[in-house]
Structures are given as structure tokens and as C-alpha cells.
Amino acid sequence: MKKTKSMFPDAFIPYGTWGSSYFPAWQASPLAEVNIAQFAGEGMARIMSLRKVSINYLDYLIIGSTVPWHWKFWNATVVASCMGKRVPGFQMEQACATGLQAVILAGAQVQSGASEAVGVLTFDRTSDSPVGVFPERRSYRRTEVISDVWDNFGFDPATGKGMLASAGSIARKYNLDKREVDELTAYRYEQYFNAKESGFLDRVLVPLEILNIQGKHLGIINEDTGVKKISIDSLRAMRELDSCVTSGTQTHAADGMATLLVASKQKAKELSSKPEIEISFVAKTEVRVNPSCMPEAPALAVQKLFKQTGLSMKDIAVVKDHNPFAVNDAVFSKVMNYDWKKMNNTGSPLVWGHPQGPTLTRVIIEALEEAVDLGGGYVLIFGCAAGDVGIAAIFHVR
Image (cartoon, rainbow, N blue to C red; front, side, top):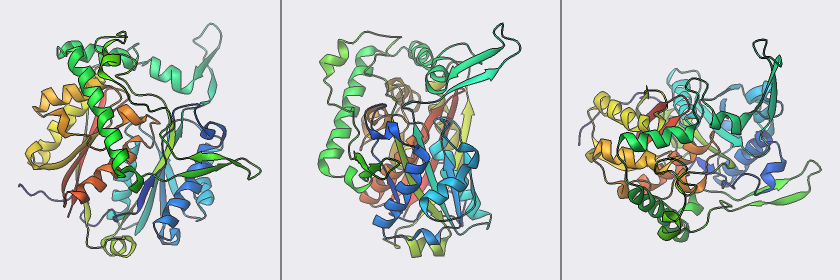
């Protein structure tokens, strides 16, 4: 196995200082009725309490979300107040890359020496997403109205095409076969339900109670609501919306939050439930591909990352990605000459949903937990983002 230097030699992820809500499908739970930032802050405090980690250790907070929420102007400070710890911080976003970028930024914050323990908190609510009215003098109406989630997913202003069209165009570019894409999707569902039935998901996902503004019980988020078992026959019977893309071979909008901590080496040992486990940052990269080629970008980002590090797929213990379309994984398999059955062993966003901000954070949490089960090794995380961007990172679990 090749060795490579750490990008942040002084920053670590303390084992077990993480957790995610379940991701109920949009409009399918009480999450549709609450301020998602408040829920996320309170949820982080609850998760850290269950992990026996005092939030008093935190000296900084990085939050990530992509859908505007009420009082967003106040940024990380209001979320920190909901968490119960008045610390400085900021909000960042990069579409579906938000969850991974927030963790990388936390690593940089610790590496710089500015902080010893940084909280990463990512969240989004696609349900009842806001509608904005923008002054636009070039428009004959002098105003433009945009539904934040649905209009952005349906239209890329740089290409004039929607995200679904990008999946179809890449399926044609790589001559993908719909039968294989359907088989891949059915296998992803099988992986998810196997992880659920084994109890693996119970170690990373935390049931969270929802209260209304009066503090009355609205419900408990304890399922990836909307996820049902699916058969290969039903997938094959679905109408193609574009090449190799059906309603079953793409993800669905969802709501949720996910959190983890990044700390200095000494602080990580203090916070970790298993201080003998060391989780470090190895490398990270991004690429931008041709217009309307988004599902291709993650594979090319991984290629670039391997050139940086000298690693290869043979060196990787856990492979996990953000896959809004099954096409993403099929293309990755072709480009990297890698069996798609070997990746996403505990589930993936294709199945459990897509709330943008916390999606890759949950991917990271599940992947790190899987790596610990395997006795350590390199963990490869990658995904795509709006604007035909691919992002990839490697972590090391010792």
C-alpha cells in the first residue's frame, strides 16, 4: 500500500463524535413545518449529548446549507445559540458538495491553529422551500420569481438545461445500458435495507423529536420516510425520462441534518469514544467538466485525486459517493474499471434521499463507521455538484 502525506497533519475527526438525522422525503414528516436551522442546532446538541461529548469543548462552528431559511442572515451565530453554545462561525455552501466542503473547511480551521475543536453542522429542508422575487430590469415584467429548489434543479442558467438532462447526456456519451442501470439501482436498495436490518444504521442515525413553536410534540423523525423496497421488474417497467433515467433511478428531495467534529490531535483523543482510533485528512480535489456533463465529474475528480496522492482503487478500503443518479455510479465503474457492487455498502443518497447540504456529511459518517468495522484503511468520498463540478476526498482510518 502506498503512503501519502496528510493535507492537514494537525487536524483529525474524533471517532464517534458524529451523527445524522434520518432523511424523510419532502413533505413526508413534521420537518416540513419547522425552521430547519433551529432543528439542526438543537439536533446537534442532542446527538453530542448521546455521544457523551460536551459542546463546551467547541470553539468554532461551520454550518452548511443550500436552501434559504428564515433568519439566514444571522448565519452560524443563531444556529450556535440553538445548539446552546455561543461560538463564532460561518455558513458555506456549494450545492451538493456542501457536506464534504464543510468538513474540509473545518480541517483547515484546525490546521491553521485558529481553533482546537470545530463543529460541522449541515442541514437543508427541501419541503416548502422559499420563493424569491428578484428585481430584474432586463425582464419585461421588471421582476423574476424563482422557486429555490425546483427551479434551480430544473434549469442551469449556464447551459439552459436541467440536471436530469445532464444524466441522460452522459448515459449516451458512455453508451450505458438501461438494464445495467436498473440492476445497479436495485442493488443499491438491497445494500440499504441490508444495512438497516443489520443495525448498522442505528449506529449513525439518531431519532430526533420535533416540537412546534409552543414546545408541543409534533412527531419523531426515526425513518428515512419514503424509502420502500423496489424490485428489478418494477424498475424495468418505468418510463425513461431521459436515457437510462427513470423516476426509480434517481434520488428524491428530502429534509435532514448531519453533524461531526474536527479537532486537534490531543483534543480529538479527549473527545473520541475510542481514542485509539485516528481519522486523518489525506487529500481533496475538484474538477469542472464540460457543460451538462455533471454525472461524469466525480469519476474525473477521483482520477485527479489519485494522481495527486499516488494511490489507486486497490489501496481504498471504503468507497462511497453522492449519487443523485444511478448513472453516476455506472459511469464511475466504467471510468475507473471498478465493480460498482463494491461501493456504497451501507446505502447511498440514491436510495435515502437528497437534502443537499447534509447529504455528503452523512455519506462521510457512514463510510468512516464502515472503515472502523473493517479495521481501518483509506476512505474515498466523492460526488457531484451544480455547475458540472466533481469533488473527491480521501480520509485515513488507523
